[in-house]
Amino acid sequence: MTLLNGPVLFLAPVAILESLQSRLNPLQLSQLMLLPLGMQAQIPALPPGGLLISAGHTCLDDYLLSAQWAQAQQWQHVDLALTGEPQCAAQFGWMLAAGGTHQALSLAAPLLDALAPADRNSWLHAGGPGAASFLALLQLILMKPLLESWKIIFPNGKPSPKADLLKLAQLQTEQWQDIVPLCTRYLILAQDRKHQAFHAQNCHFNLPAHAEPASSLAQFILSLTKAN
Image (cartoon, rainbow, N blue to C red; front, side):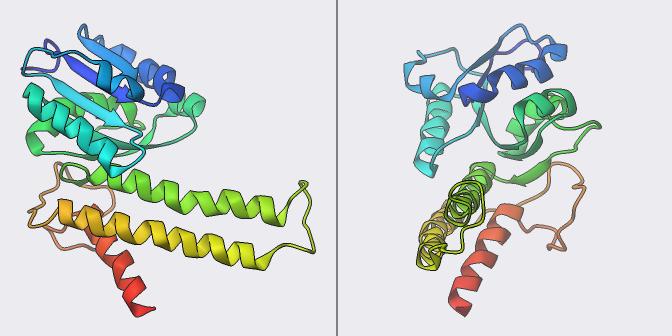
């Protein structure tokens, strides 16, 4: 399969499909199917040899369903973590991280370059399969308390002198209760992986040459929990 003549199925949340489409239109991929992530279970069997790109998974189990579908179809699979406001990203590109094998990334690279800000390779190779989904889920967990704490501190759009500090502490506790099992489960998924960056990374993170960024972050977070 080559990217320009093989099927490409891109699953993502419906709210960002239009933005993704606008970034990918210049590639003129005749067999690109851009569908809502929730339609995954309704997709019939397709000929082998395609490429599945998925973004916006709500949990690791959701990611694994996509990975299992791709494996059953004998397709390559790349998972993404996308950060950006859809309208702005349509013009300036998405900040993105990708997870997958080198074979899968070699097929997906033109799409990833089109989605990312200007210049080739301006996206992070987060690691092997599932690495980007882990980063996206971690970001969701980290953002949720920020949004909820805003409601506690500014209940009517104005600072409240009666902000419930116990609720703020509870939010932080719940956050760690979500983060620890996510990191633990991802490290099991990525166990014994050997990482080699698909391309030169714009940020080196001061990691050893074969250290996977996603796994290194998960290990660092778990080390903080042990220290406390």
